[in-house]
Image (cartoon, rainbow, N blue to C red; front, side):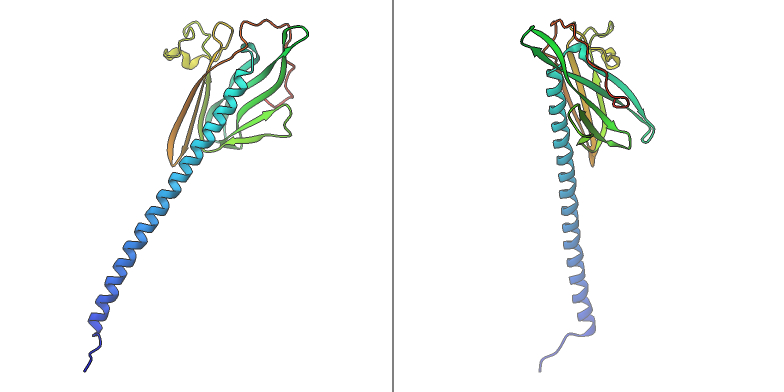
Length: 207
């Protein structure tokens, strides 16, 4: 004669299966969260690198005195961020002189401080080139206390670029799940090349 499970045995089986299911669910949830954190971190890093490449490319095509660095306060996030204006240097083959070409501005979105935006002269509007931004800073090296030596702490307050120091340090920091810092030193190629041309002023409110 076959016997069925008693009530206690049935409850023990259910309890065991419950523990097993909870353990499996915990493992799956943890794995999914780790995967999402990894993906978010990877996306933020890729965007930061892409933004850095765009900024570096624009800087290299410019001229030291056609690059302007400024700092702006953002009340929406209680922070200050650097912004940069870059005019492309175009060679006039007829005169052999550099002329100011299209301008590009890089600055943080005042409505969302996690977004780095870009606006070029030919663009219809601002384009977001990086998100998860925590900070962005630009440094020149042509200050008396700095002397184009970026190892000096004084250079952290220097925003001046000239033919004497056509070097710009770009710092981008993202913070999504985990902090990520990216730095680059950019030499502006068209230094010590004279030009009588002066860049046209930007439309009001752009920079």
